[in-house]
Length: 352
Image (cartoon, rainbow, N blue to C red):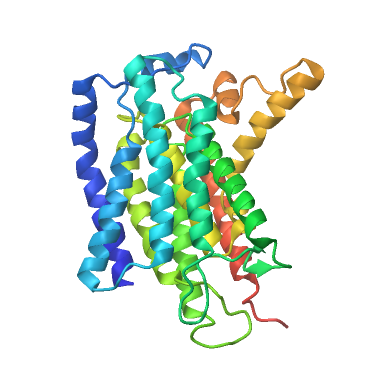
């Protein structure tokens, strides 16, 4: 538990102190957020707000993780490093996208094809590497199986596993990006899911098959270090949320949304909870589905299902205040996270 507390605390302090510094740097360079003209009119007054704030909590998370290992003397594990690689790699893709937006002063950055190539390259390296590096018990960071509370069913093979991992990475990164439409709306739910993975990692450590081959034990390579990663990113996100909560002093940008999507998928794959992630991230899934429904419905009928998509903008145009939407969506996210944690513990409930 010591390394978890240190990782979260160092990342939290680093980001809370570092974000105002980053805000001043971005303001001095003139790198303000561009706002789409077709978006809600209330968003036009946010034009010029400092962006690329995800850079701070990515660096803060890395610092928190590194300091925790230096203080405790524990060696970093391949599982922890792989998740941090996925987060940082996708964050770099997002940073390039954000930089193009602010440098060329337009609301669109990287072309979709170029962004997808970057995501695929990072995702392939993560997925392939996660199937290697077995420990002394021949357990690799990931396994070519689908998973819910643990791996289930027959192996899908390494090639299909890589494709599946890429689908998860692309879907979740895009989902967090769509959710990041109001001040604090993405950071709050992401923090809740990260807190859930701190709990999951600790529980898997205490019930690891490496300790005892008992019913319901977990064959996860490095559960404690995955909890440390989740704690470090959680501290960074909470530190960032202090400045990103309504009214936001800074936006995370694609730098932050892609990184958060990556770290959530990385934790889900390596803790063997791939489908559980869809429940924990129920709000993000719901917002993503609203866009799919809007686009599909319009193509089929020529009519819009919502006043505007993603879903949060529908409620904005319905007259809800931004803070009302954010707080109510946070409550929904807390409910989804609680349901996910409840399902995770369900198999450990005493059977009558």
